[in-house]
Amino acid sequence: MAQSHPDDTMATQSSFTLFPSRHPGIISRKALPRRRSLPLVALSASVGFFIFVWIYFLSIFYTPSRSEGRHHHHNSALKVQHIIHSPSFRRTVFQTPAYSHSPPSDLTLVLTITNDTSSWGSLTVTSDAIFTFEDFVSRIREQGLPVESLHLGLLTSDLEAYHRYTTVLSRLTPVKRIPWAKAEIIYLAQLPGDTGRTQSNSESVTRENRHELGAAVQIERRRYMARLRNFLSSHMLTPEVEHVVWLDADVYELPLGLFKRFQELGKIPPDTNIDNMVKAGIRETSTTNTQSENDSNILQEMEGVPRVAPPIGLVTLRCQSFDRRDYDRNAWSGFGKRPSSWELNNIIRGTEYPGMESWARALSQLINGTDDNDIVKLDSIGGTALYIRADLLREGLIFPVHSVVGTGWGKDGTDGIETEGLCYVAERLGWGCYALGGAWRTLHVDV
Figure 1 (cartoon, helix red, strand yellow):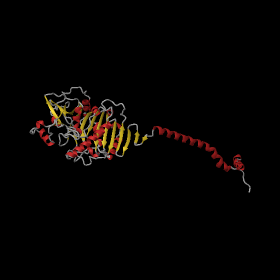
Figure 2 (cartoon, rainbow, N blue to C red; figure 1 turned 180 degrees about the vertical axis):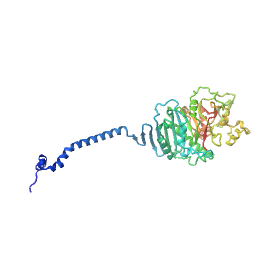
Figure 3 (cartoon, helix red, strand yellow; figure 1 turned 90 degrees about the horizontal axis):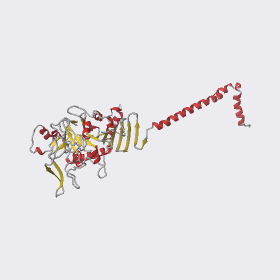
């Protein structure tokens, strides 16, 4: 059987093109597609090249950078960075357009801690208000500080609350409504225990029972709070920060101009004589620590030696709730008996108790007869709204994790844990604790 040769096939196929008049149908099926294929190929190549170039430049300029445990999200208004250190420790950092690596003077760091979303508290007597993180943001905004001069650090031990806070800040539009240039929301499930095992000293503590716990439980609760405060302040403090303001989450009202007043007092040079500003709390004695034969520390007062007011290092103000004129009983002057809330209310109304001349005086007693420009000296300070000069933290001031007053080798002291020990430590660094006089006050929730 004869076989066709490849050349014969090529010749046969080419004959259709050479003599189109004999095979008109072949023209539409063979010739025309070949004539149109070149423009289509060129067009396809051009489109493909354009898409490749577009994807290449998109990957360079718009793809978010990612590394293990870190996720960056950028837009023209707000920069958000999620950092996951472990399942029990993660952070989200927000930077607004006002943020600068060269911040202005008076950079103020606001710090607060919440257990969960219920930590913002509520009112049950005067209203049925339930406060939220959004209310806290509004509170800070109303202080009216320049956005670029304010940073926020918020620590929570509840993952749901952490996601809630980050969602609120991510969706807060326009961005100019955010009152700070930088904020960091931190989730820390719990701190490690002293032995390396984890401990959760706050498990048995609720908002309802935290003031009714026994002394031993209260000490452990205060110890854990001091550790949390130290963790947050050391983590957030940068060299540019000049002022630190601690706010309790359940303080629902701040007087306008409070932050500015804190800054004014914090900027007074330490060598300035402020005796004319201090209207109470300065005793006409000086105290020194001596050591007795039984190796215990005893405070001996040297009478007749005038004291001058130490420079301003820490400042607070009176905190009031519905039924307590002095809600924060950790702020007082003197070393005698501290009257109960019931006794204090009676004293304010005019009741006299035997020996009350030697009792410690609460803030509402100290500020009696003062005006808004005055301050009073404190020997112990509270943390509902607390100003700390940042340099003190750099010099070693911490929230004591044990009772520092009367401490001996191998045992805690008798007083001065958490905020109550701040003034004791600060005075040994050469600084004093004070409270605002006059009508300055914050409001605390009922529950």
